[in-house]
Image (tube, rainbow, N blue to C red; front, side, top):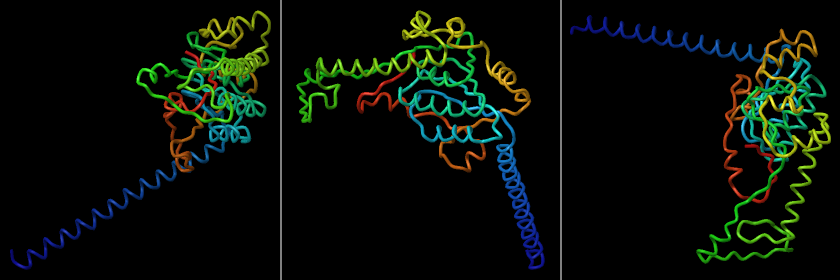
Length: 304
């Protein structure tokens, strides 16, 4: 190839590289503008009038960041109402209590309606009672009004393998019950008293929030699980249906809410502002491990 021809092809390659660079730059610029404008649009939408929607899914434990998000919903004037979708068998009694309190703070500022999914039992039902109105599917499972505390007893296994556990403690009730020693009568009485005291709180909450007493309260506060249809007849839920019925109820409380967009509020996995701005949903996980790990007795409000 003579020098003139070589220069010609080299110049063509340079032009092709320049065009490829600018094409790539323009594509990246357009993509960045689209993403940036989308984030801005999402941020603007977050400050327009709306009905907020939150999901309570899986095992309930205390979550201060989720409670803080609910407090923000309560304080935001542009959030006119809240839809709480619940699909949970319950969780720790203290965690359910904290969630109930956070939802009640929202309800003091604006209408709140709960929509029960497949399961909203025990602690999940505690969360539902924080709403002003409860909607359930006919075959939703709910109720399970009760408290449980349990732990594994591995004393027989330790004895079989000849393993002893030496414990030094300040009193006989310290760190009771424990899985590696037989429970004493006094420790059993104490554990039963803790469960009974928390159960009275749960039962009293049902009586207060659902207006039940006497035999009507006894029939539902026995730990049993009910379908949505039975729960409505028993006074535990108000309406059968789903989110459409929930929005219709909100409209009956405050005309104009039905026309507002329903915006999802959720904590993202990284708990970062940027991810929240883009509306990324947070997957739930890692909680069953917390339940399965014995790190001391806990009171649970768990359904089936």
